[in-house]
Image 1 (cartoon, rainbow, N blue to C red):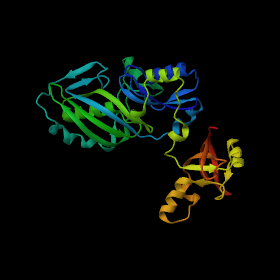
Image 2 (cartoon, rainbow, N blue to C red; image 1 turned 90 degrees about the horizontal axis):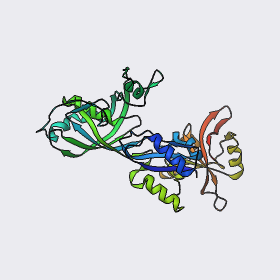
Image 3 (tube, helix red, strand yellow; image 1 turned 135 degrees about the vertical axis):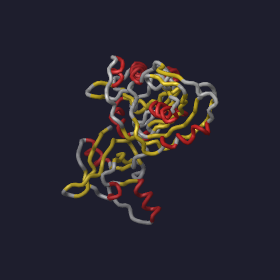
Image 4 (cartoon, helix red, strand yellow; image 1 turned 30 degrees about the vertical axis):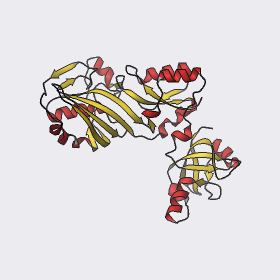
Length: 323
């Protein structure tokens, strides 16, 4: 039982709650998640099982959300879970009035995370300080919003804007809702949030806790393999003897006749040039053992390696041994 679970997190559960539940269901001690999701939010929560917890750091970083932003309302937590600080009617507003203000939230942007967040300041979580009635200076951070697409506008006294947001790690959608309200001078808060994609996992392929329980009872549950979850990384194939040495933690001298990158070969063939290990220098790579039946095919996943420079030339160094 080693690999990844694409969990559809239910509302009202913390990410830690989900990890604890999966740990009990699968009778596993080593379970971890790939990115905190607020209790009120639902959607994709990548969970690593067994030795796959060592691979969480290598998952792709992109995330995507479907969010509903309510205008005319300000809360302590920047979502509807918090206490309402102020309200003002925004009746009569149209989407056309809001659209010009959305452009500032695309691309490389700066944002101050919500006071109720898991960020640490001087060794304390911000939400712990907030619950104790204390304040702290929250450091501004730079994040990336790759796309912000408007889906719908729901008019009313407190109109709501429904959007899809694709962003990098560390982006707070609650902060975008809050800052949009500030820009409009109306106040704004996050009314609902669904994570539709995280670390390469899609909502359409996710399992609810109920579905996971059912599959476990029917003995049909299969974790997502590390090779599948890490397919965004180029793959290196090792002959059996070298695979054994690599799994023992040894650095291997680069030899073109014994190591092969399918990504490099594919790109080189397209360009009409010979493959070169220098294409992969300093890059993180999936390491596989060759298949005995076909030495050019990817076999058992061994872990994560990196091509590094040494006095003796290029070496393939183990970073995380999984096998």
